[in-house]
Length: 338
Image 1 (cartoon, rainbow, N blue to C red):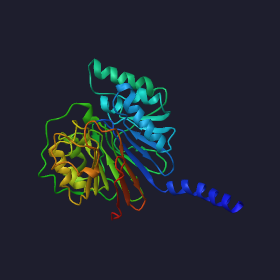
Image 2 (image 1 turned 45 degrees about the vertical axis):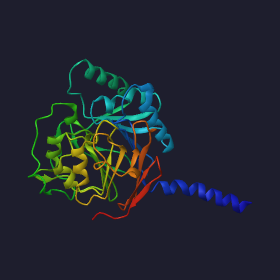
Image 3 (image 1 turned 90 degrees about the horizontal axis):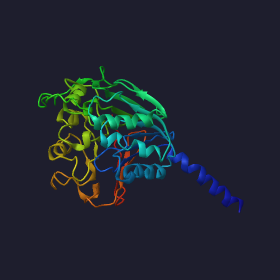
Image 4 (image 1 turned 60 degrees about the vertical axis):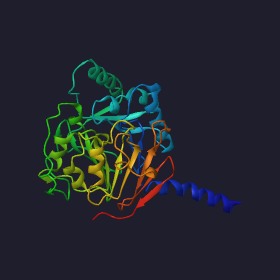
């Protein structure tokens, strides 16, 4: 009897230790907004954006459900990339469901008008009940166990390349600037998140010209293992010069059925050098079958599918596994980036 008790205790103690050796990332379906939950090996958590308001708390409930499954009872950091409805709108409803330690953002909203000002006001009312951190390009977000570097914020890009980056970018000559974007999208907090040799990038809704500031004429970012499609995979972002320079092994597209996942952006992502797979939260209805990922790699295959998520687990050696929660399709990417 004592022997069996000892075995059970060893299994119980060993399970958290195994989980502690991995970074877990959950890409939560908020219907074309963003809500990405990072759970560090230390157990500390960082949520990037909170989805939409309304819908009877739909997005906040989805985030809280995934957080519970991930063993997260408190969000240590909630990063608001920018002040648009599909990114910051869910904050009040989320705060009713799960405690938040620190809110992170780029400062004041640059947009005017009643809707924009009301949205920002509702966020600030909640934010001011917790800690608040304003970040700029070059800042770090102190999530224990992760290296979270802010590469863009408040319309500015990092001045110096990240370690190992800074090489001339051959893809710049074929990618031309566009009209200046005065909206909150261009103010997005963009982050490079590292765990050992593993790297994933999340640039919020950063738009075309701001992307080019990060990689042209020299690539200040280097390469990544996983590229979270910028701006939900819309053509206003995802410039070839940045997507191709990053050379991701895997791309995750946080699109909705009818928002994001434009044919041009998906084509750019799919043609990136060295790309192995694209995983999508929704089948992009306007993109056509040829631009969408294969069905096993899509979480919601029609507009009426129940909400699910994509889970990524990364090891410090740079290997990682991606899993589709709808069908259990899972693939491991064992190669270690030099």
